[in-house]
Length: 151
Image 1 (tube, rainbow, N blue to C red):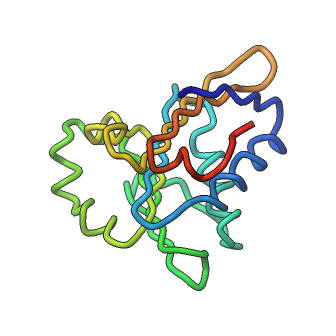
Image 2 (cartoon, rainbow, N blue to C red):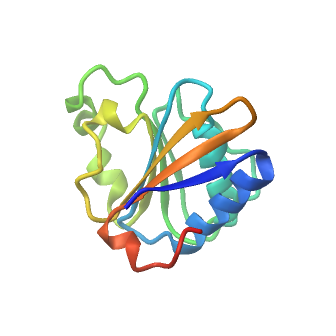
């Protein structure tokens, strides 16, 4: 099942982020795909904010992984940007499995870490730029399908 959601402005992206944050559970992955500038980090920041974080949300481009823990957010969260990985084996080298234990993960450039679409609790969101705004192509894994409609 694939759903296209128009994101004509920041308010629409924030609304999608709130929907994701409401349904997010430990063990989930939100895989954010798209070209440079497509809005992956913007959507990730909005999800972190929707989970209750009130501070600045840095892009994990340099650090690769940023961790958010309760009570600053509703649930343990890992925000990862795998753009700089040259080989999926590097995700294991940085201890990704340890970070993920008991946490949900927002994964930018998931294909650089070997991808997560095979996991039943993966929500894949491909962001595409349009002339006016963006569109999110949402592909919920089996574990996400029972959590409510996307439209």
